[in-house]
Length: 188
Image (cartoon, rainbow, N blue to C red):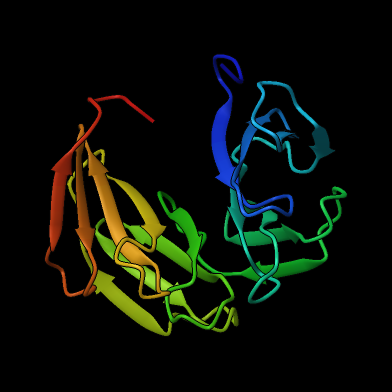
């Protein structure tokens, strides 16, 4: 067990050793459990404003650890030092209802910015505030968008979680190449 009701659960490669750490984000404080024993080993104050969306992603390059990210109404704040200071700031998205995601879509080892907006994925590959790629996938009310490398090719695939069903588009062609059930409606 780790965290409490109302926490935002996350995982990330925060410490060396090749294993993900459990992270809960609570009111602007990141509680990081690097050895997965149910106790926070590190606490970082970063974010905390109403509407902040916490994420983890590697903006430092191949082989680096994940960074803490706060998405706030179209502005991405990246804390690469796990010290509560935004040392990178990007602007992308910001429309009402935008859902941010970060992952290495093009395979260069650095996280790309993605905005999911009503079934359309807008991806900024060089973090300059302009969508370099747009994909259509998902779009049903309640869809939860995720980016992760399903097929092991080094590029994040598009995923939509919908009421206990996972739909993964490895070709980013609008078609789910992988579909499986796991979870139930309301699960995070």
